[in-house]
Image (cartoon, rainbow, N blue to C red; front, side, top):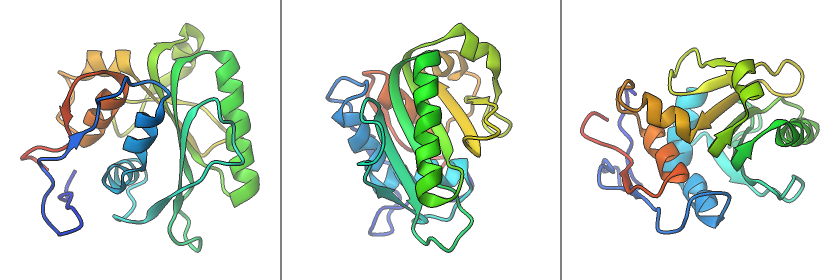
Length: 194
C-alpha cells in the first residue's frame, strides 16, 4: 500500500484492533467488521484501487440471507466502479457456489453492472473449487475463480491459504482483516509500514 490509512480526524489509525470477541464465522461480528468504514476503505482500495470513501455499504434485503454477506456500492452511481459483494461462509462447496452465482446475478439485475465477488471461507474450501482457482494476479494471498458471465471477478480468501501464505506475504492490512474474520486471534489492522 502506498498511502496511509487515516481515521476521521486525519490521524493514522495504527492502534485500531479488529474486534474478535465473538466467534468468527457467518455471524454478526463479521458483518460489523466488514461494515466499518476503515475496513471498507482497506478492501476497496486494495481490490479495485478505488479512492478512499468511494464506496458505501448497502442493505442486503433482496439477497440470500444464508450467508454473512455485505454489499459495497460506489458512493457515486455515475462511476465505472463495480459493486463488491463479500460473503463470509463456513465451507465453500458447489451448492454454495451456485447460490453465490445467483446472488451476483441479482446484484447485476439491480445495478446493471457485474459485481466483484469476494468469498471469505472460514473452514473448508472444496477440492474441486481449489482446482478451478488460480493465484490472484496482484495479491498472492488470494485465489481467483473464472467468472465470465456472472461477476467481473471472483476472489477467494480462505483461512487455510492465509495460514500457509502469512509468512511469505509482506504485511498487508487485508491479511489482518481476513485473519480477524477467520480466526479468534487478536489482530492489529495496521502497522508502522502503512
